Length: 385
Image 1 (spheres, one colour):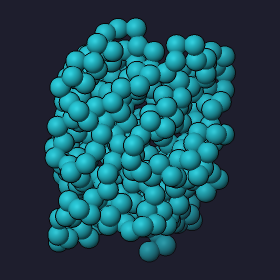
Image 2: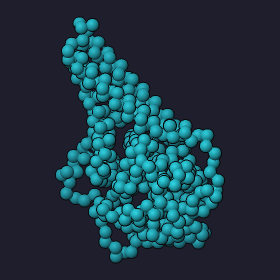
Image 3: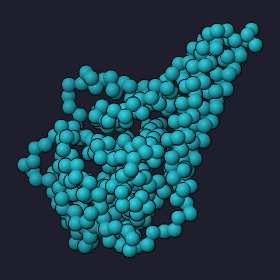
Image 4: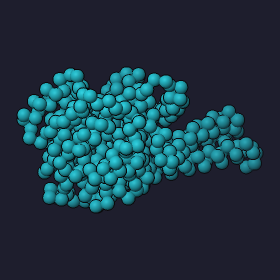
C-alpha cells in the first residue's frame, strides 16, 4: 500500500476528500432544498379562498410599452379571490402611459401611479417601489417586473400560500424567477446561472439562512416594509431593491419559500454578452453589503470548488497512478451528484435540464464573477439601474 501512494499523494488526496465532503454537504443541504420542499408539501390540501390574504401586485415600468402589452394581461387575469395590480410609471418616455390607460379602461383591478418627473434620486426603482407600496390598499405585497410572465393563472395563489402555510410569523416569501429559453450559448449559460443562484438562495432560506430574493418574484408584508423604514440605508446603492432588502429584513423564522412549478415567473434573457455582463455586474455591486454571515456562506462554496479543481490538477501533474485514479473517481462522483441534484430540482420547478455542459459552466461562471468583482474596484463610471 505504501508503494502505491507517496506522502504527497496522501496529503493531496486527504485535502481533496475534505473538499469533496463540503461539496456534498453544500449540494445535499442547500441545493436540494427545492426537492425537500416539494416532498413536504406534496400531500397538503389546497388552501380555501377565504384563507388567502388580499394582495397588491406591484410592477415598476420604465419604457415598457412592449412588455406591458405582452404580459400585463397575465397579471390581470389571475385566478385569485381578491387582488389589485399597481403599475408605477417610472418616468417612461415611450407609450407606456397610453398602454396602461387602455388596460385600465378594461380592468377594474388595475391602478396606475407614477414617479414625479422632478424626482432626482440615485435609484428611481426604489422610489417607484416605495410609491407603489404606499399606494397599495392591501397588507400583502407581491412584486414582479414588467417583462415577467407568470407560469400560470395560479401564480398569485401559489405565492400567497407561502404566508398561509408558514403561519403568522411569515413576513417574506421567496419565489423563483426563470428566464425564457433561446437556442444560444449565452441563453444556456444565463439559465444555468439563474438556476444555480435560485436553488442556492431558496435552499439556504429553507435551511434558516435567507440572504436574498429576486424582484421578479418576491412577496412581503406591507407592515414589514415600513417597520424596517423601507429602503432606508440602501438609498445610496443603485441596485438592491430586492436582494439587499431581503438581506436586511429576512430571518430564519420569518421567511418562507415557494417553489412549485405554477409559482415561477418567466422573463426574456439578455441577448448580448455585454448586456448580461452589465446586468451581472450591477447585481454583484451590492453583494459586499450583505450581512457577514451571508457573505461567509456564499464565499465558502466557490472557494471549495476552486480548491477541488486545483487539487485535481495537482494530483494529475504530481500524483501517482493510483492517486490519479482515485481523484478521477471523486470527480465523477461529484459530477453525478451535481447533475442529479440540479436536474431533479430543475425538473421539479419545470425548467430546462442540463447535461455535460455543467462541467464548463461550473468553472467559467466563478471566473466571470471573480473578474467582475476585481474589475469593479477600478471602475470609475457608475453602474446604472
